[in-house]
Length: 227
Image (cartoon, rainbow, N blue to C red; front, side, top):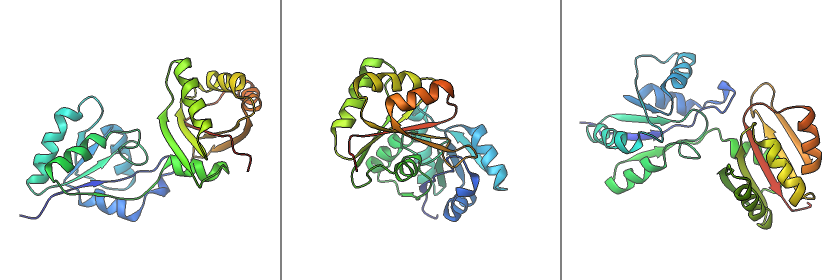
């Protein structure tokens, strides 16, 4: 029996042309594809003209139950590709618990490089790249949001967060009140048709988005550095 393996496969964050040759090959050779949303992944596979694959869901609500099943499949010699809806699995997406389980069970896995909203936003912002930190989605409660952003501004380099378009105005209001001089970048819809980068102070960006309500996925970048 051939040895099974997990393949963590990054998928495009917007532009479907960004998928790599290795990612396509991994999806083609997989016996099972574990995905955050089977409907979303089905559309990607249709675009890639890959058919006949067994899709199973793997998300925050079923990881504890699903992981033992996937470990058994790999133990039986099957190849299991793991994808999230966009970008690198396990980065603010399902996958971290699976990797921990692989390490505990000594199950083989390979991580493929590929699209990343974090690195794309970091480079495109023009903010310092020598040192940076990413903290996932900002907290919902305003007090915790302020605390997280303040800590980010006190750190060296650049701090990145994911933020909802429904909360970005509130977040910019918090920054404008407490850190009006901080440098801010709002990166929207990365790699998509209407990709935009807005750079300035929080009061400047707040004024812009009050007149132009934001839509789409957002990466918020903060830095106190002046160069």
